[in-house]
Image 1 (tube, rainbow over the protein chains, first blue to last red):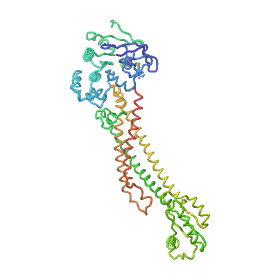
Image 2: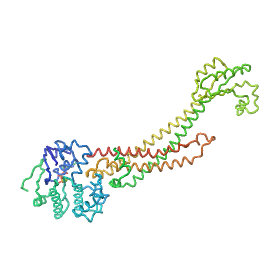
Image 3: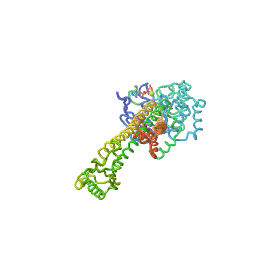
Image 4: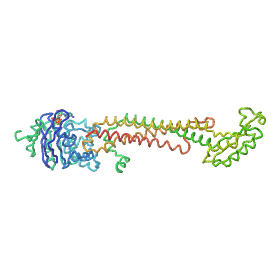
Length: 225
Length: 299
Ligand SMILES: Nc1ncnc2c1ncn2[C@@H]1O[C@H](COP(=O)(O)OP(=O)(O)OP(=O)(O)O)[C@@H](O)[C@H]1O
Ligand SMILES: [Mg+2]
């Protein structure tokens, strides 16, 4: 689905990531871990094309990302659901509209999918908050809403950047369960998190591989978590 | 832009409009500025059209008439006049030529010398009124021929005082046109500034839209439609007020001359209706350009 070949990235200073090779195969579940500032978010952004690699090559759904024009890139983002670390909503629109935003911008009939939308909101436990504006939501509610928005287009890949960043243990377990459910439905999932306890807890739910960024390199972590 | 884009642009898309937050104050400023520009444009247009009419009229009326002045000793006067009339009759491009009678000449001189002028005793030149047809005649050729055959004849085609008048009217028209162009340019600049401000203020919105898979066209449209509509509404208001102002000007009269002729005539009243259309087009182009440029900077 997403393949990185010898990818390097730098924001202008020294190299942040170098020689990263990674392949997310269909239906796989990966955790991405590493210390704060090691480049997890950066790697995620490379995966959905918000950043362009300074070296190496990224292939998404079989096509080289460098060859895609802006419109093709927009279409690509409809096939990849992203939960951003800082959520990113339109603060003037109520929650339901925000979750439906990917449908709106891709020209789909939101009215026709309202059943789908309310089921999805119920699934993330936000069925009774649909009219709230994003700034009125708690951190955990925002993250669940972000997850709902990421999957509303039923994308083939879900990239979640710290989806459990500011929720309590119970809530993070719930979010993890949601992600595992998505994976069982056949979606490819990549979750960035530095919460090792969460990653350990996931072992009982899904077959997950753990990738770790250390010293600018990406390594497959063993069973020694 | 494809046909579909244009159609969806015109029909509007309530959802697409909602993705960009409403902007009350800047919207009103854009509306006001568009109205002010349209108001000014109406007057520039009125000036243009009035001076254009004036230039055409002066050029046409004066070019078509000329005067031949024959100063000759009293005994040769009639013979020279007859000879001149014969030459004029043969000249192609002259519709009619007529020697003025003594009474007519006296009437022309009355304003200057009073009614009691004993015209018969004075060596007043004979005047011949020449009216050209639409093609006109060869002034220099006629002059040459007259100087050979009618030594006392002087042809005055009025160009000496026609030219400065027509020139003045024409420069007035040029000034009007230039004002219209400047108003158009200023409108474009203003809308570009307003659109850039709106795009900058909504950078976060644009980023979110881009992240959830909105295409540039979709994002740009949300802004372009707003500014185009604002410019259209503002310019329509301004045009209406401007036309009201022109309509309330005193009607054209001979006594008032140029000043009271300022305004629109007949079909000319339809021309200002182009102002809102052009204003909307300018706004459309300016916003489209700004939005595409701004979006091109994002990944
Ligand atoms: N736009 C940017 N310009 C310059 N440097 C940046 C930019 N974004 C991130 N960085 C730097 O790159 C490094 C990696 O950032 P990144 O956000 O990928 O870390 P992270 O692993 O996601 O951290 P965290 O766990 O805190 O979210 C950090 O040192 C950060 O300061
Ligand atoms: Mg991060």
